[in-house]
Image (tube, rainbow, N blue to C red; front, side):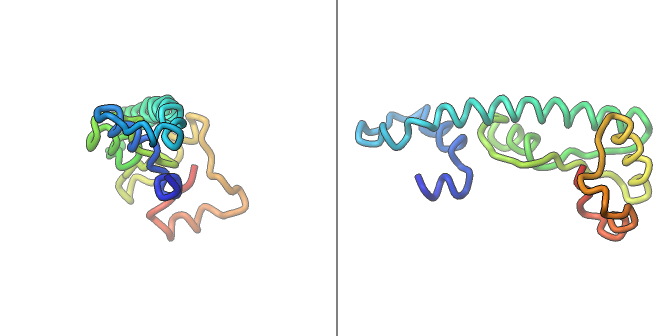
Length: 131
């Protein structure tokens, strides 16, 4: 269980164990897995909805967008958005569309996490714009 907790694998472990009978001597150690899964499922559904909305808004403005990892990967790989822990949404846009994409998501209420980091820094680091 310690390894599962360190790797944040409790929701996935719960998903696997639901389909297989669990030995009675594991009951205490696995007691919290169902609750962890429920929390992950609610969080995953909320993030999936938000990510789909963001992608839709970007596409509506003519900005091609690909949703990667996180809840999208959980749905594609496991068929269950609650089975995989994630910490953020990863949306890929073309480099030449990044400034337009930023304006669109800012218009939806998102902002760069650290206002003290200048926007030029993010333009030089094209892999991660934390919003």
